[in-house]
Image (cartoon, rainbow, N blue to C red):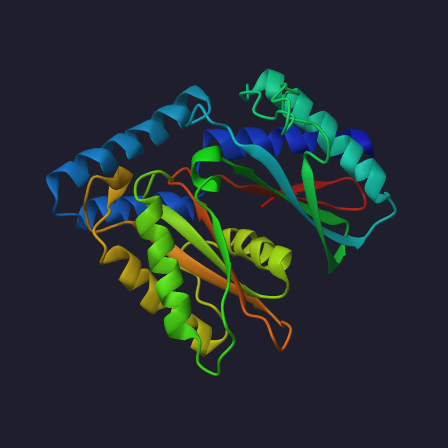
Length: 288
Protein backbone atom coordinates (compact mmCIF):
# COMPACT_ATOMS: atom_id res chain seq x y z
CA UNK A 1 0.00 0.00 0.00
CA UNK A 2 1.28 3.45 -0.91
CA UNK A 3 1.11 5.91 1.96
CA UNK A 4 2.35 9.45 2.58
CA UNK A 5 4.81 7.96 5.06
CA UNK A 6 6.28 5.69 2.39
CA UNK A 7 6.53 8.63 -0.02
CA UNK A 8 8.38 10.54 2.71
CA UNK A 9 10.89 7.68 3.10
CA UNK A 10 11.63 7.29 -0.61
CA UNK A 11 11.93 11.05 -1.07
CA UNK A 12 14.69 11.16 1.54
CA UNK A 13 16.37 8.21 -0.17
CA UNK A 14 16.38 9.64 -3.69
CA UNK A 15 17.48 13.07 -2.49
CA UNK A 16 20.39 11.46 -0.65
CA UNK A 17 21.26 9.47 -3.77
CA UNK A 18 20.99 12.49 -6.07
CA UNK A 19 23.10 14.75 -3.88
CA UNK A 20 25.93 12.31 -3.09
CA UNK A 21 26.37 10.27 -6.28
CA UNK A 22 26.06 11.10 -9.96
CA UNK A 23 24.22 8.86 -12.41
CA UNK A 24 26.56 6.51 -14.30
CA UNK A 25 25.83 8.16 -17.66
CA UNK A 26 27.13 11.49 -16.36
CA UNK A 27 30.22 10.00 -14.71
CA UNK A 28 31.08 8.06 -17.87
CA UNK A 29 30.70 11.21 -19.97
CA UNK A 30 33.03 13.13 -17.64
CA UNK A 31 35.61 10.33 -17.83
CA UNK A 32 35.41 10.36 -21.64
CA UNK A 33 35.90 14.12 -21.61
CA UNK A 34 38.97 13.76 -19.38
CA UNK A 35 40.47 11.03 -21.54
CA UNK A 36 39.96 12.95 -24.78
CA UNK A 37 41.02 16.39 -23.49
CA UNK A 38 44.35 17.79 -24.70
CA UNK A 39 44.32 21.15 -22.89
CA UNK A 40 46.29 20.77 -19.64
CA UNK A 41 44.18 23.22 -17.60
CA UNK A 42 40.99 21.51 -18.77
CA UNK A 43 42.42 18.13 -17.73
CA UNK A 44 43.25 19.52 -14.27
CA UNK A 45 39.69 20.82 -13.88
CA UNK A 46 38.12 17.56 -15.04
CA UNK A 47 40.39 15.56 -12.71
CA UNK A 48 39.31 17.77 -9.80
CA UNK A 49 35.65 17.16 -10.70
CA UNK A 50 36.16 13.39 -10.88
CA UNK A 51 38.05 13.38 -7.56
CA UNK A 52 35.25 15.41 -5.98
CA UNK A 53 32.65 12.92 -7.20
CA UNK A 54 34.63 10.00 -5.76
CA UNK A 55 35.01 11.69 -2.37
CA UNK A 56 31.31 12.57 -2.20
CA UNK A 57 30.39 8.94 -2.81
CA UNK A 58 32.90 7.62 -0.27
CA UNK A 59 31.92 10.11 2.44
CA UNK A 60 28.18 10.12 1.61
CA UNK A 61 28.23 13.90 1.48
CA UNK A 62 26.80 16.31 -1.12
CA UNK A 63 29.16 16.80 -4.05
CA UNK A 64 28.46 20.57 -4.16
CA UNK A 65 27.69 23.12 -1.46
CA UNK A 66 24.73 24.28 -3.57
CA UNK A 67 22.35 21.37 -3.12
CA UNK A 68 19.77 22.97 -5.39
CA UNK A 69 16.09 23.72 -5.28
CA UNK A 70 13.83 20.62 -5.15
CA UNK A 71 12.00 19.92 -8.42
CA UNK A 72 9.95 16.73 -8.70
CA UNK A 73 8.64 15.03 -11.84
CA UNK A 74 5.90 12.53 -11.05
CA UNK A 75 4.54 9.83 -13.36
CA UNK A 76 1.12 9.09 -11.94
CA UNK A 77 -0.19 5.65 -12.79
CA UNK A 78 -2.98 3.51 -11.41
CA UNK A 79 -2.81 4.11 -7.67
CA UNK A 80 -5.20 5.05 -4.89
CA UNK A 81 -3.09 7.66 -3.12
CA UNK A 82 -4.31 11.19 -3.92
CA UNK A 83 -1.93 13.88 -5.20
CA UNK A 84 -2.24 15.90 -1.98
CA UNK A 85 -0.92 12.94 0.03
CA UNK A 86 1.93 12.45 -2.46
CA UNK A 87 2.90 16.10 -2.14
CA UNK A 88 2.65 16.05 1.66
CA UNK A 89 4.94 13.01 1.77
CA UNK A 90 7.47 14.60 -0.58
CA UNK A 91 7.46 17.84 1.40
CA UNK A 92 8.19 15.95 4.62
CA UNK A 93 10.91 13.98 2.82
CA UNK A 94 12.57 17.21 1.68
CA UNK A 95 12.50 18.51 5.26
CA UNK A 96 14.08 15.25 6.47
CA UNK A 97 16.76 15.42 3.77
CA UNK A 98 17.58 19.01 4.69
CA UNK A 99 18.50 17.86 8.18
CA UNK A 100 19.91 14.40 7.50
CA UNK A 101 21.81 14.52 4.18
CA UNK A 102 22.28 17.46 4.94
CA UNK A 103 21.07 19.96 2.35
CA UNK A 104 21.89 23.65 2.35
CA UNK A 105 18.68 25.63 3.10
CA UNK A 106 18.35 27.29 -0.30
CA UNK A 107 14.74 28.43 -0.50
CA UNK A 108 13.84 32.04 0.31
CA UNK A 109 10.87 34.35 -0.17
CA UNK A 110 11.46 36.04 -3.56
CA UNK A 111 10.81 39.54 -2.23
CA UNK A 112 11.86 39.60 1.41
CA UNK A 113 14.67 37.02 0.84
CA UNK A 114 13.68 35.46 4.17
CA UNK A 115 14.81 31.85 4.33
CA UNK A 116 12.28 29.01 4.48
CA UNK A 117 14.64 26.00 4.47
CA UNK A 118 14.11 23.88 1.36
CA UNK A 119 10.34 24.20 1.29
CA UNK A 120 8.17 27.26 0.81
CA UNK A 121 5.28 28.59 -1.20
CA UNK A 122 4.86 26.23 -4.20
CA UNK A 123 8.21 24.62 -3.35
CA UNK A 124 8.92 21.75 -3.79
CA UNK A 125 7.65 22.12 -7.34
CA UNK A 126 5.65 19.22 -8.78
CA UNK A 127 5.24 18.32 -12.47
CA UNK A 128 2.74 15.54 -13.17
CA UNK A 129 2.46 13.20 -16.14
CA UNK A 130 -0.09 10.42 -16.60
CA UNK A 131 1.55 7.02 -17.12
CA UNK A 132 0.44 3.49 -17.93
CA UNK A 133 1.98 1.94 -14.80
CA UNK A 134 0.80 0.44 -11.54
CA UNK A 135 1.76 2.87 -8.81
CA UNK A 136 3.85 5.95 -9.48
CA UNK A 137 7.36 7.09 -10.31
CA UNK A 138 9.07 10.05 -8.67
CA UNK A 139 12.14 11.74 -10.17
CA UNK A 140 13.97 14.48 -8.29
CA UNK A 141 16.04 17.11 -10.11
CA UNK A 142 17.81 19.30 -7.53
CA UNK A 143 18.49 22.45 -9.58
CA UNK A 144 21.50 24.53 -8.60
CA UNK A 145 21.40 28.32 -8.73
CA UNK A 146 24.53 28.81 -10.85
CA UNK A 147 23.14 26.86 -13.77
CA UNK A 148 19.58 28.08 -13.27
CA UNK A 149 20.60 31.74 -13.30
CA UNK A 150 21.86 31.58 -16.89
CA UNK A 151 18.78 29.90 -18.35
CA UNK A 152 17.16 31.89 -21.15
CA UNK A 153 13.98 32.26 -23.19
CA UNK A 154 13.10 33.98 -26.44
CA UNK A 155 10.21 34.20 -28.89
CA UNK A 156 11.55 33.75 -32.41
CA UNK A 157 9.75 34.69 -35.61
CA UNK A 158 8.09 31.57 -37.06
CA UNK A 159 9.49 30.22 -40.32
CA UNK A 160 9.49 26.98 -42.30
CA UNK A 161 13.16 26.28 -41.44
CA UNK A 162 13.97 27.92 -38.09
CA UNK A 163 17.07 25.83 -37.31
CA UNK A 164 19.55 28.62 -38.03
CA UNK A 165 17.75 31.08 -35.75
CA UNK A 166 17.55 28.47 -32.97
CA UNK A 167 21.25 27.68 -33.42
CA UNK A 168 22.21 31.35 -33.14
CA UNK A 169 20.13 31.80 -29.99
CA UNK A 170 21.63 28.72 -28.33
CA UNK A 171 25.20 29.79 -29.13
CA UNK A 172 24.60 33.36 -27.96
CA UNK A 173 23.22 32.09 -24.64
CA UNK A 174 26.09 29.61 -24.13
CA UNK A 175 28.66 32.33 -24.89
CA UNK A 176 27.01 34.73 -22.44
CA UNK A 177 26.87 32.03 -19.77
CA UNK A 178 30.56 31.13 -20.26
CA UNK A 179 31.83 29.51 -17.03
CA UNK A 180 28.93 30.59 -14.80
CA UNK A 181 26.95 27.31 -15.00
CA UNK A 182 30.06 25.27 -14.04
CA UNK A 183 30.72 23.47 -17.32
CA UNK A 184 30.90 20.91 -18.69
CA UNK A 185 27.14 21.23 -18.68
CA UNK A 186 24.16 19.36 -20.01
CA UNK A 187 21.95 21.70 -22.04
CA UNK A 188 18.20 21.30 -22.37
CA UNK A 189 16.42 23.10 -25.21
CA UNK A 190 12.64 23.43 -25.24
CA UNK A 191 10.97 24.39 -28.51
CA UNK A 192 7.27 25.12 -28.91
CA UNK A 193 4.25 25.16 -26.68
CA UNK A 194 3.67 28.45 -24.84
CA UNK A 195 6.34 30.52 -23.11
CA UNK A 196 6.08 28.61 -19.83
CA UNK A 197 5.83 25.25 -21.63
CA UNK A 198 9.07 25.93 -23.52
CA UNK A 199 11.00 26.36 -20.28
CA UNK A 200 9.33 23.27 -18.82
CA UNK A 201 10.35 21.30 -21.93
CA UNK A 202 13.94 22.46 -21.45
CA UNK A 203 13.85 21.06 -17.90
CA UNK A 204 12.33 17.78 -19.11
CA UNK A 205 15.15 17.51 -21.66
CA UNK A 206 17.64 17.50 -18.76
CA UNK A 207 16.11 14.27 -17.46
CA UNK A 208 17.25 12.28 -20.49
CA UNK A 209 20.42 10.22 -19.94
CA UNK A 210 23.60 11.51 -21.54
CA UNK A 211 24.11 9.91 -24.93
CA UNK A 212 20.48 9.13 -25.68
CA UNK A 213 19.27 9.90 -29.19
CA UNK A 214 15.97 11.64 -29.89
CA UNK A 215 13.54 9.30 -31.71
CA UNK A 216 12.84 11.96 -34.36
CA UNK A 217 15.75 11.87 -36.81
CA UNK A 218 15.48 15.56 -37.66
CA UNK A 219 15.64 16.58 -34.01
CA UNK A 220 18.45 14.09 -33.34
CA UNK A 221 20.46 15.74 -36.11
CA UNK A 222 19.79 19.18 -34.62
CA UNK A 223 21.03 17.92 -31.25
CA UNK A 224 24.28 16.61 -32.73
CA UNK A 225 24.93 19.77 -34.75
CA UNK A 226 24.18 22.07 -31.81
CA UNK A 227 26.37 20.05 -29.44
CA UNK A 228 29.27 20.19 -31.91
CA UNK A 229 28.78 23.94 -32.32
CA UNK A 230 28.67 24.50 -28.54
CA UNK A 231 31.86 22.51 -28.00
CA UNK A 232 33.62 24.35 -30.81
CA UNK A 233 33.32 27.56 -28.75
CA UNK A 234 36.25 26.49 -26.57
CA UNK A 235 34.70 27.58 -23.26
CA UNK A 236 35.68 24.27 -21.71
CA UNK A 237 35.53 22.92 -18.14
CA UNK A 238 34.76 25.67 -15.61
CA UNK A 239 35.08 28.22 -18.43
CA UNK A 240 38.88 27.95 -18.54
CA UNK A 241 39.16 26.58 -22.07
CA UNK A 242 39.04 23.12 -23.57
CA UNK A 243 37.20 20.77 -25.88
CA UNK A 244 34.20 19.93 -23.67
CA UNK A 245 31.83 22.78 -22.88
CA UNK A 246 28.78 20.48 -22.81
CA UNK A 247 28.53 16.75 -22.21
CA UNK A 248 25.29 16.60 -24.18
CA UNK A 249 22.46 18.70 -25.57
CA UNK A 250 18.88 17.48 -25.61
CA UNK A 251 15.85 18.97 -27.34
CA UNK A 252 12.18 18.48 -26.47
CA UNK A 253 9.35 19.96 -28.52
CA UNK A 254 5.61 20.63 -28.35
CA UNK A 255 3.03 21.93 -30.77
CA UNK A 256 2.76 25.70 -30.72
CA UNK A 257 0.58 28.55 -31.92
CA UNK A 258 0.76 29.41 -35.63
CA UNK A 259 2.14 32.88 -34.79
CA UNK A 260 4.66 31.69 -32.17
CA UNK A 261 8.07 30.03 -31.91
CA UNK A 262 9.08 29.98 -28.23
CA UNK A 263 12.55 28.62 -27.46
CA UNK A 264 14.00 28.11 -23.97
CA UNK A 265 17.33 26.90 -22.65
CA UNK A 266 18.06 25.30 -19.29
CA UNK A 267 21.57 24.40 -18.17
CA UNK A 268 22.57 21.64 -15.80
CA UNK A 269 26.07 21.93 -14.31
CA UNK A 270 28.58 19.07 -14.27
CA UNK A 271 26.91 17.96 -11.01
CA UNK A 272 23.92 16.77 -13.04
CA UNK A 273 22.03 15.38 -10.09
CA UNK A 274 18.90 13.32 -10.47
CA UNK A 275 17.43 10.16 -8.98
CA UNK A 276 14.20 8.24 -9.45
CA UNK A 277 12.08 5.64 -7.73
CA UNK A 278 9.02 3.57 -8.66
CA UNK A 279 6.59 2.85 -5.82
CA UNK A 280 4.30 -0.10 -6.55
CA UNK A 281 0.74 -0.35 -5.30
CA UNK A 282 1.66 -3.14 -2.89
CA UNK A 283 4.21 -0.85 -1.24
CA UNK A 284 7.33 -2.36 -2.77
CA UNK A 285 9.96 0.12 -3.86
CA UNK A 286 12.21 0.01 -6.94
CA UNK A 287 15.04 2.54 -7.23
CA UNK A 288 15.62 3.30 -10.88
